[in-house]
Amino acid sequence: MAELIDTVAWVRLEGGRILCARPRGKDVFYIPGGKREGDETDLQTLTREIAEELTVAIRPETVVHVATYHADAHPGGPTVRMACYLADYTGTLAASSEIEDVEWFGYADRDRVPPVDQLLFDDLHRDGLLH
Image (cartoon, rainbow, N blue to C red; front, side, top):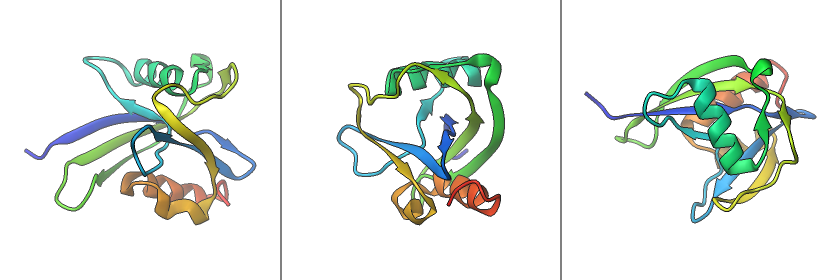
């Protein structure tokens, strides 16, 4: 069976742009979030990862599933499963020690994110939410 990387991502849209983060030592930006640990639920993974990466607290009562995407991490590589959620937050967005940079991307930035993130970009653009 092919390797599966099981991730959860936070879809934060403002003004037709989506929040993306670049981890330290990486060249590529990602939708904020990360890998599930053990038997964590999607909500537990989402709240832990976003607190670790962006120093804000997800408001659990506002979490809404957007979609789940699957794509190869790279040609011949493992498959990435990315469960995407909208959610409100409390606190001030800031890059943590593991995040080098945070940017707001438009659809024109699609080629700056991995294949699985590009599927989300396509759907958000089609729905008029990402400009």
